[in-house]
Length: 301
Image 1 (cartoon, rainbow, N blue to C red):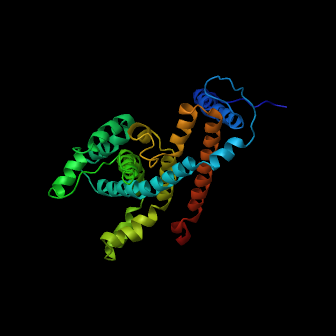
Image 2: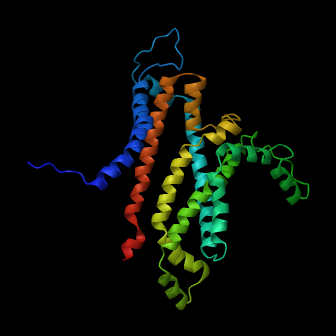
């Protein structure tokens, strides 16, 4: 029986991909399985008088009965519902404007993409000064637009506005990534479709609804998936600006896991919460992925 030898190109590819795979397994796969094991124990962050022991599904039962967990879950759903249309809509609008711009397109594209590559900590510091009460940039702008009639808003200190404020920050910081994806989708639309539409007298909004939007179906699904997953993992903005407050109005699932594991020091319960979040992300991912099988543009062909 002849043994099949790998070609030099295959060996080169294997050598290049092996370090990445090793790091992936070491820092993602192994900790994930460790978390599964810890979720069935009463493991503490620091050694204490109570020995570590197997507790079965008690951590999961405690979490599902915890009102703070469900408030964090509701906050994440609300944040996702607000940030998706705001962030994706702004990204699509920017992509359309830049796609029709012949001069300085790359310059503007880089400027719009800059917030995405800026560290979130820096973005939060900048926006915290804008949210400052009562004399921040937003309150000053509100005072000017209302001719001094509007009262200053405590953006991060009011339960009614705190989550909305974080949504605005998050949408502004990350829309550049979706904009680049939308620009790629727009550039893949055949020019012949627009030329034929122009000959038929189709312009403006009708051209967008009949050609551009249907042609971006797969792009929209991809953007929807990645934006939803990113929204479910909201943490840094909350941890820096509000720490989950006021009155748990900005607490999220990841922040709940962080507090449970590193503040309360209940690693077992935090691991169980992380498993629940993982299951939620997987379910949402596969649910949204089914949309790619129902592309209306392919059905017309």
